[in-house]
Image 1 (cartoon, chains in turn blue, purple):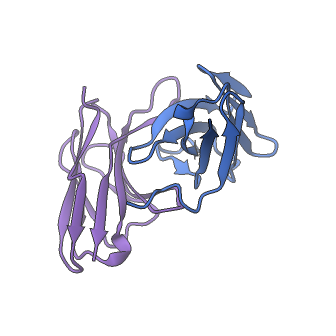
Image 2 (cartoon, each protein chain N blue to C red):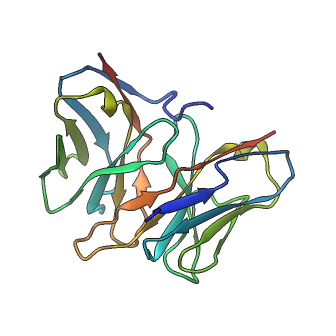
Length: 112
Length: 115
């Protein structure tokens, strides 16, 4: 079947380099943000989340940075591996209910 | 725990046929969701259910109906399928935690083609 990654912006990185995936959000009332990874043929998987009272949060090999002033979110992946190749989505929540609003996604391609 | 399960995995329909996509979760979550995903697009919310007995429209509800059968199950029905409904459908569930996390857990998806 057709890949969901077609027609999406693509970030190509060398294996071992650090990757930075950016996301702009539009709702200044959003107070919760989350990154998902989606491999081909699978459902999205949680990577990391952050609340608006934080600027930075670190996980295993991943860091999320939040800049509320310019409504910008980024996901940093250290020492990118071939298994990191996937489509990455950011999503936001305003706290009014449990719904998430998803961005369109970015394809990360890792060159060996 | 199986997490979120969806059936069927693949389906081909002719225009005008009807079908129901099934979703179940075993995490005792209150909220469940149906999304569609088209090439080059993000996930678009079709319907969601904040709790058992309630359902609400999302961004793209036209042509769909849902049923929250019980706390575990949330089904999506296409009454008269159209080619524009060719897509990958994902079900998800969540439970707002005291930490303020709204993480949603996704099923593996149903790939639907309408000819």
